[in-house]
Length: 235
Length: 236
Picture 1 (tube, each protein chain N blue to C red):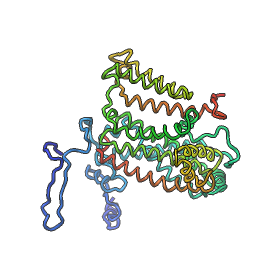
Picture 2: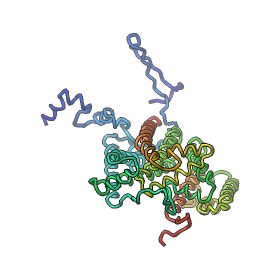
Picture 3: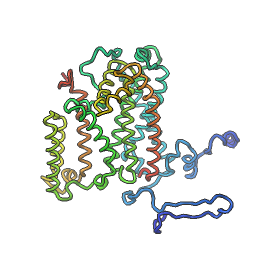
Picture 4: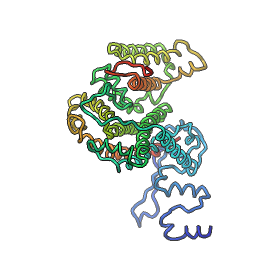
């Protein structure tokens, strides 16, 4: 398909327009992918068998792995549900333990409603926010301004979390902040610090989100005992 | 070989199978894709780099195959399950001690469900760090986020169905969060549980959500998700 002419669509009338309802062929002038320059040149191969065989093998491996897991580990089953007997602690399924851990620190409406809603909305709007589309290195532009804003946001986050004793958020946030400002404090032209300096703000925010979610989930799963008190899993 | 050729020439054979064997040329290989209901979601040609394992880690594909395992094992489990108290719990015991390979079936369903939550999440991370949500794929990213939420809801509604202590209290903790939604929280919780606390109606509601409504919604959105991959320019 050539991309020389001005109009966005080429319209051609077919020759048999008298006999049958008019057929019009529409050829888009541009491919649906708008960022053509992002496409790396690459060899094309036939889907059958190249992709299909990979899918078949993938399906087989997935079935084998799940079957092996099922042979080794049994699904848990406790005694019949008893509304009169509350276990201590009562834990949500593991993927909600991050929220349950938040509920321990923050008021229910914040931990149970506002934060999860913000997380979902935040995820959905990612591609509609320009900064996530451009993804320039965090330290490429005005470095001093960046470090002031970043520090202010981190201090504000920590300042909100500390009164609620949400150290499981504060500590990972500060560690990631430390990592993010290393390229500012000790700029290098190569090596891992240089690589770190080219990470975008989007990368840092997503990494922060994933790290906090993971830390909260692990704490909720392994480090919480009766009345949601801190326990060590090996004791 | 001759018999094979003749068989392929029969009217009945040709009416059933659209592809003629053997597949020798690239035209034949294209027709395999064109002529198949399940394969025509693929383009005929793909970039060699884009289908390598290190490019996507096949996380979306793995999530989908886990969903297939979940549908198959789930339908089989439905044959042994009654959403009633205490039948539901007794069914679990029957699966363990009475039904041949019943425990294996339940294990498959449970571990595939946990794995699917993980692989769908990792799939999202892979797409994010590769920047694969950029225009024109914005909407498909949003569909993906909804699919992740549906996966969590499917897992959560399934969690109650064995109706043991673990199930009951895990779902209680989850349902209590719904209470904190301003204004409509209490009503929403009542609607979800079919009462003020978990009981027979909760089991039926979660059963219907888990076996009918949510899987249908997920299937529909997965179809949209796959279709949009092609329409937004394919894997590249």
